[in-house]
View 1 (cartoon, rainbow, N blue to C red):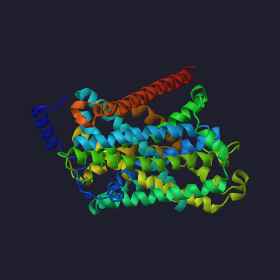
View 2: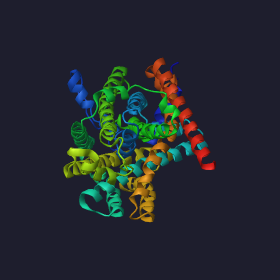
View 3: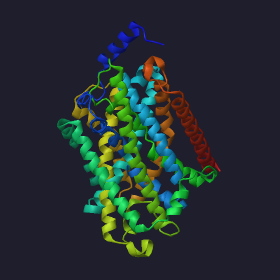
View 4: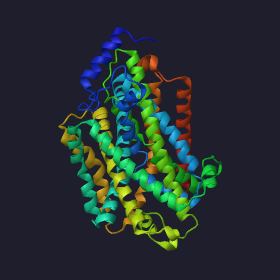
Length: 457
């Protein structure tokens, strides 16, 4: 079904009146015309790494390492499935932005009722806060471990990185992509080195990628699995992906140009998410190889930091160097994640409530919304990092629960012929996405039922 001229006119008017997503960087990256495959791919490479950062943020660390420490390699299957789901959803998200010229937040506000739009906006904002809990606490604790800075001060320092983002945006979006790529490389190299030293079971790793029904039947395993899903498949990344896919210059009047942008953006996204899959697998493998069967408590970053230099826990490979590398990787993860989280917060606020204020004030508002609850909690439980870090797993489970509220609009929009035209989802993509959404909802309802049952029993 083709759009009428009236519908096209209405669409363009809406775009002009609402403004472009991340207007200051929208369409600023040049893409060579008629270039070869690799040169074109390099031009499109970048947004994927910003997306992938959200899939390896500090929230993944506790859930993935704890998963390995408690259940050895069994939850590697959850990481694999989560990564495949992420690739599917992020490809759809990028396509939505490329084809429509709008991000997921803008389209959701346009095409839902006022009441439903408010509900979805609140959930999206809470998801940003839940994401930032892990990122802010992770960065704050890394500063504490590396430089002995009090946690509350460390959290305030991480809040100030919004000013860094303003400077980076002035330098160009490519600079942001390069900085985040460097931080991700540090994380990958640190954990590859530590896993190599830990001498994991190759057979156990391979077997761990095979799904098993035990994951569903075991409540503790299911709870942690949902934490891994929530930490791996991030709701805010769907909003972010639909926006930063528009940073490349594009002629939307040319279907071939749109098709090329979708193709290379998808390749970029999948390649970078594969790196995130490797990092998350390394985290779980490290937990399994070093901590499975030990009596050590691994519920906190501090515990992990101390364990890596304790020969009674990790054996002969124990070294202060491993602990310091862990803290460096944690800081890299937290800082790279806060950059992308702040961008996502801006996209959600602009898209849902069309907040138009100066950029510095806009980013400060979105950042403070996320930092304030964490800071209050840190002050209340000052000196009790265990209580503060208890927020982490809970925040990741909340992200899993919030995920369908972003996925459902994404699937609806990208499956709509009226919105996407010839670029609507293929049948297998649409049905796969709906199956994923249905499974997530069923698991969430089951988990909530189990939790409520425990509370009132």
